[in-house]
Length: 204
Image (cartoon, rainbow, N blue to C red; front, top):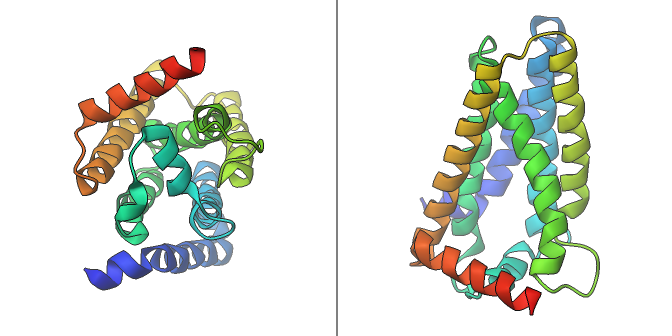
């Protein structure tokens, strides 16, 4: 477990490189949506590196937004739930290519990341117009919009697919957040109260 906590970002990176290699070698065996999913895996792995290593500082910014010292817990431990979430959410469209909701959940994640990193500038009261991970987040936003446009233009998406995609994204993301909060000995309700207080103070 200690090894996984310490090296989970490197494990995710190796996994991503393997998946990208498989995509290149067996390109014709994958559908376009599966290619989008693997490409997204590459982008979000780069995103994790930008958030935590180059330049890093994501959890420090989140400490300011949530009004709790996240640096008191090993960064690798806090990064473990996101890594598991990333692997699962990007693997589902590959294992079940006929379920468009799985693909849409991935694309919605990309759009969410792009938006939340911009919002984070104000929530974190940052002097510079940048949050750790923002560059790759905006690339994911554009990439995800293109992916959704492609799926819609080919007539592949139905209303139920959107419903499933949103439920999967919201449910998975909340589970991810709750897991991180548990490592910080926080309850979800407490975090919501802290966030509300932060937003209220921003409004003056």
